[in-house]
Image (cartoon, rainbow, N blue to C red; front, side, top):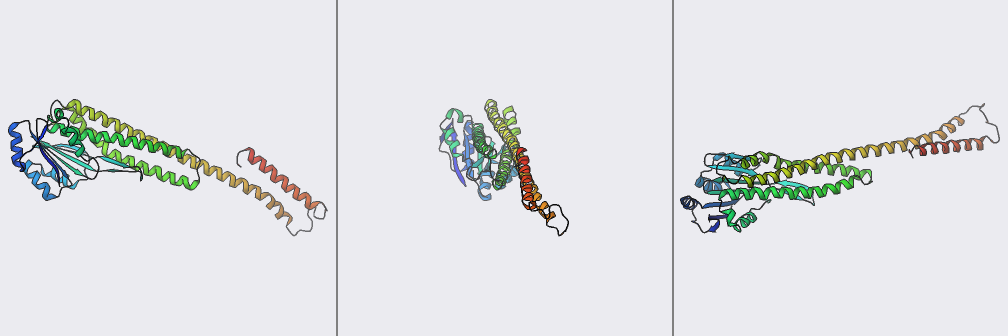
Length: 328
């Protein structure tokens, strides 16, 4: 559906014709006016009305309707088409989810298409309308504001992930039970998957931002390079944060697996120690339990107490030995 539609003249919102074609003709007649149409998950019939009026390329229209696109920048004869993937992080479920925002930029018009609940563009529109000096630069200002808003949110989400990762790091290096350790390993793998999902939104966007910052893209104001360079720098910062998170997650996972191995070795040493201590009296008792007539001390009156003391001494000696080596 159409969320908002407005005609802007000299950076200020004005009431334009209800018909898109008439409004576009009026905007192009003045040279400084432009249309901004915002859509949210439009149907094919709704978007056909917009695409036919603005002459949008069929391939870009198909991408805008189907969604599930990688971040990209495509240039057609009559318009510029850009795909961005805003992200949101649910701290309760520790999940990162991505949505999509498509931006069409052409001669005196900009069309934004949003899929999902992330990055509502109403706040971007209000911020631009409060600053006519920026908005008077036309569709380029809208494209910059949308990119800046989404990329800045990347940094905020990355900071939230950093906080949760520090909590997980503390949990990993705290002595815990084995069953809890298995749960921790699953959490680390899940967290790593969330970071990977995040990187799928940021990594492909680097090339389009570099092109916009280079000032060689049509339908983009020639003096907008510093602004897009700033967005590109923020994107690089977010990407570096994610790369650091990914490396730290790998280190935490290796450390956790090493701890699990050490704990298992400690458990095996303890089991082996107690098994060895149990084997000594079993061996002695088994020998003297044989039905032989001629055995040492078999008919000696002190044979039984001495044998018991001998087994106790052996057990005590083994216990001291294993204790000294840290096996018990």
